[in-house]
Image (cartoon, rainbow, N blue to C red; front, top):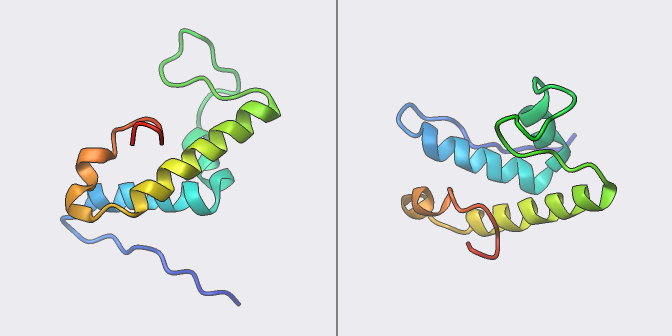
Amino acid sequence: MSTLKLLILKTRDYDLWSMRIEQYLTHTDYALWEIIMISDAPAVASASAEGPIPPKTAEQKLARKNELKAKSTLLLAIPDEHLLKFHGIKDAKTL
């Protein structure tokens, strides 16, 4: 049996908690995060749909996974008091 320690949501810390959970899941189990984000999305995304178009090829999926893992790793190292400033940055290179 493995032990999993997740961040516990505190009443006034939802924004920080949600950012940390997103970072944790994209870093440890990207497939789970992908399911959370697109489980209720339509199966086929069109160019006119709002939001990013999901990757189609295995190479694009791997590149997206690596990018999110790099970004989440960097964000995990930022203290909570500065996290809100950096969370909106879209790619690891800019971060």
